[in-house]
Image (cartoon, rainbow, N blue to C red):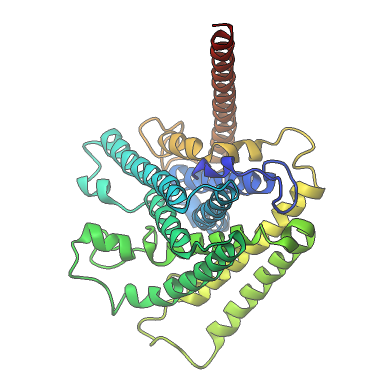
Amino acid sequence: MADQIQVARAGGAAGQLGRLAYIDWMRGLACVLMFQTHCYSSWLTPEARKTEFYRWSQAAGTLPAPLFIFLAGISSAMVTQRLREKGVARNAIARTTILRGAEIYGLGLLFRGQEFLLGYPISPWTDLLRVDVLNILGLSMILMAALCWLTAFDTLEKSRRNAIVAGLVAAGLVAVMTPWMWTTLRPRWLPWPLESYINGVHVYGHPQPWLFPLFPWVAFALVGLALGFLLFSDFAKKKGAWFFAAVGGAGVIACGLSLVLDAAPVRLYSAEIYDYWHTSPEFFLMRCGVLLALLFLVYAWCRWGWAQKRFSPIIQLGNTSLLVYWVHIEFVYGRLSILPKGQCGILKATAGLLIIFVAMVALSLLRTRWKKRKAKALRSRQASAAATAESG
């Protein structure tokens, strides 16, 4: 969701697709999947929620969160590598990326405060401390900045390789530790607002799979970080298409390996701990495989398909994903909901979804044009000041 990827340009990175359109398209796809998930969840009647249509809708809704966090990892790697190539000092890079993560985390707290005020007096005060996707995005970016600082070496290539290895190892450790951190190794001695950042316990006495704790969600960011640094490898720069084909192939292998490991007779965890669909490393591997395969498909669509032939509303949404995430929530779940909650059939809810989509694209365009106008005005003032200084 963070629009940090905007500072990473395509020159020298894989694919040469101009502003890394495949990243924007993938982030925009996450926005669309998020819209449909929220709209149908908020507006459909109880009867409509029992349909196969609704079940598939909610299944697709499991993709946006890992997509956003995974892409934040790619973004962090790109920003870090670009700053290193410019000769920016290690501490300065860490400061820049940590502050960006802190900004996203602060926005997450602000968002929770806004939702509490708009939902008052119905909303419980504990919602202020709920661990949501923006909170974990910000913390993930801070942790990735620390990892990049720790793995920085005297050369760009060594620093990049160190970060790739460290990112993958850390992601694997998080995935393996998640079942235990949710069960036998739960830090029950922590107050629930702090424990919730470990396992999403919130106020319910046991971890909740619909929240976004560090275990396992930060692992998606770490995988994205490793992949982001891989984009700067010689092979990725010279053979972009083959690189992404390999990424897609690795995704398919990861999905197959997930199923094989789940069916294996030897278990790392006891039956009481193992939960394939929520905490298992096998399910994490499956979701990573889906993300990698999807990245290849999106890259192919942007390079050889119609994604960049004309205006792309998906790419446009990806450019301003944080803004549309923030705004659409109130028009779907909040008091300003454009349709009555829990009272709509599938057709009516789909019409509402289309309205939300068009409105968010329009908002995104307004935001983009405003930023361009602001940047143009700034350049004009700078040119005017320079001319004045020369004439003086």
